[in-house]
Amino acid sequence: MLRVALKGLARRKLRASLTAVAVILGVAMISGTFILTDTIESAFDTVFTVAYKKTDVVVTGKSAISSSGEEGERADNTPSFSESLLATVRALPGVAEAQGAVESRAQLVGRNGKVIATGGAPGLGYSVHATGSQRFNPLELVRGRWPVSANEVAIDANTAERDHYTVGQEIGVIARGPEMHLRIAGIAKIGGVSSIGGATMAIFNFPVAQRLFDKVGELDSIYIADRPSYSAAAVVHEIQPVLPANAQVRTGQAEAQRRTEMTGEILSVLRDFLLAFAGIALFVGSFVIANTLSITIAQRTRELATLRTLGATRRQVLRSVLAEALVIGALAAVVGLFLGLALAKGLNSVFVSLGIDLPQASTIFATRTVLVSLLVGIGVTVLAALRPAVRATRVPPIAAVREGAVLPEGRLAQSGSGGALFTLACALAIMLFGLFASSLSTGSRLLGIGLGAIGVFIAVAMLAKTLVPPLAGVLGWP
Image 1: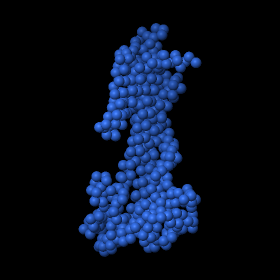
Image 2 (image 1 turned 45 degrees about the vertical axis):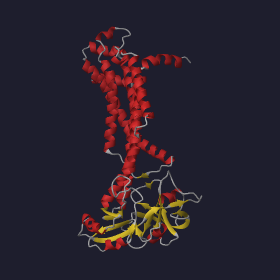
Image 3 (image 1 turned 180 degrees about the vertical axis):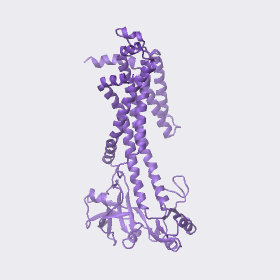
Image 4 (image 1 turned 90 degrees about the vertical axis):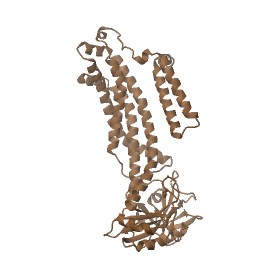
């Protein structure tokens, strides 16, 4: 029976290919979504890993009230603390080296007098110690040198390439005051990533940054290297008693992980949004698959009846139809999986064209992406084929000798349009409730609208037998 199924599939190449398209599109959306978001998440992970690669312990500001619900934590705008803490930390036995830093928002201004910004991405301002150890500096010079004087700045390589700036030219900078025109001393990048997205970087010498950011005598963070005989955890324990109330301490690894998780929460929203479209594509595709296989089985009524006459059991007929679906689903899922690679690049290009330029690193093709794409693609195809396959088992052997033999009607067809109208009414009620109910949360509202839309789709499919003949007559008349 498997051989019969495969030969039958080979005879219907065009129809099988068209059936597979529905699965390919849905699987490509799933694969592309995972590849895109995994790649962006990897880029952020690389940024933070590089930033704290040579930092064993880090001291940062701590808010009294958290916007995320966790006491002492806030994703942005954390308070600065006194620079005097740096000397106290350096004096501790477990500290081999410590260096302070400040950061804030600093926007670059182009030659046209407008702020250089892409898709609302921030303008980041950093401090560097132009002389001395660069151990804690996560930035790499591409050209030039680190800024030294108050009239110098270093900018990120992306901005320099995109807007054609080079070392020695002037660029506008807005920190916490009026626009300044500074000479570009150097061009830098964060190691490990090809792009930081639409964000720009303005990098100043440390004392200059303190003045420009209105943080003279203050620090936003202290980067610490421990002595060989101390562990990072031991230094954290040593620093905690000397911290003021508005500061906190973590290991460098823990701080990198925390920042990665914060960006991961944002990316999960993008991932869920794109996966919702993939789910819609697969849901619609399942109807296409079921309808196509139903037509195929209806056309093969006498063929299936002949197989029954020659001794094929219902179970064998069921397996043969499901085998066709399995082959179609497997091939479509593999094609969709690799098509997702191209789709991920396309989605990123769409985001860039919309002004949403996200950080980029090398493409991540995770095992999870492969497994989910294949399982969903094959699973949806086989499930969509299940009802037509069951109908195929109901073909009586006597149909082999009848001219114009047809499949027996299923239970849904026998129920008439009453069930379809009831389903349609319930679906519309759920959708309207989701749209207009005042006490629902956003998640519940979207769920109600989504379930209602799915119900409407199912009801229309149930009414197809009634709607299609007159519609086909109207559309077919020209």
